[in-house]
Image 1 (spheres, one colour):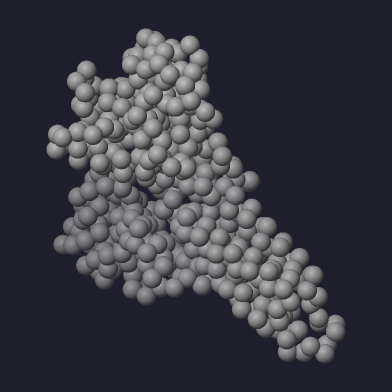
Image 2 (image 1 turned 45 degrees about the vertical axis):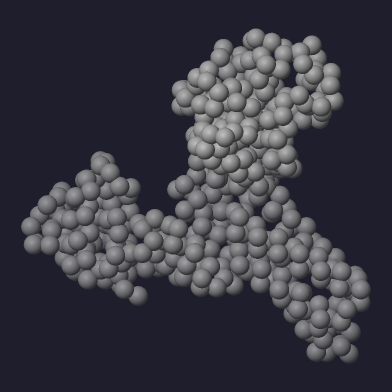
Length: 463
């Protein structure tokens, strides 16, 4: 394969920047662009840092740097690798990279270093994906999930399950090809029990997928309700700074506004939406329509109630007196909802929570004074994660891996039904082969080229 080169550190100025090489000419290119300071230097001793000067395309020194050569196959990519640790200015790094290109290296594509690591057997596909997830992890819990996958824990568990299915496939082949051999017979009850065992283990791996997904990509929480209910003020209170415009004029928020924050370790996007109402004003009408779509796509909805306006009205009623809140509930569908009785410093109903909130949680809060804002943040976090199981051993698949595991479980469910229905073993083998293939997709054993392209194209160039 050709030798590739790329900058491995983020854009911008810094103390140290790294340009890296991978491929059969890594050592040769490094030797031709680096002049060691030591008069006793003879050759690059593997894994040892040397100090010297880096040469530009014209052969002139341009930086005082460190260099290291790492021979394959015990490297990140499984190939010979080399790195130049320069001063971290972009011009310095680009000059080093241009020198590498002039000596025969080519620009690495997105994720090409990790792709070579996968193709050379240095990591399975679940580990390769974890590299990008570790880099982008927005929370400590997401870092933990990513590290466990990077460490190969998920891959090992999945390979164990696939080996059990492979063992069943071998026994089925014997049972089909040599039915007269009683010693090799696989009784249906044993067959079904083994399938149920693998199916249960796959479900255990899936248990924490949704929670891990929230920790990795964040959850979207939409603030919805009537105009002047205090949605923008509540957004500012949760963020701890003034981000949204707040005025007494109805319809100030004419479009949704999103901001990231962290609620007890959970990364969330808070979306402040326009007040839900019918309006003839064209710009506000477009904003309301966009806000309705945002509520429909949210992971959870915070329905903000104007406590000062509602007052004592309808506290004992079975029907919510706030039409905007009713629309927000309809838009939310089956997603989790939390009522926020805002302006509790001005008015609290005689009965709290009001009867019309039914079994949905309700929290009194004052965006103006900050009263109960911390409690609201805690309850929002619980709203998103409360029903999601925490993964055992900190192990949870990402979305792509979860889809493959779910498809494997579905195939095994059908296989169990076929066994109980008395289907012939050669017919059962088709389901068994399909389930094994789906498990293989998790680690990349059975992943087609377009899947690999889609995964590695999302990586940064230097990884």
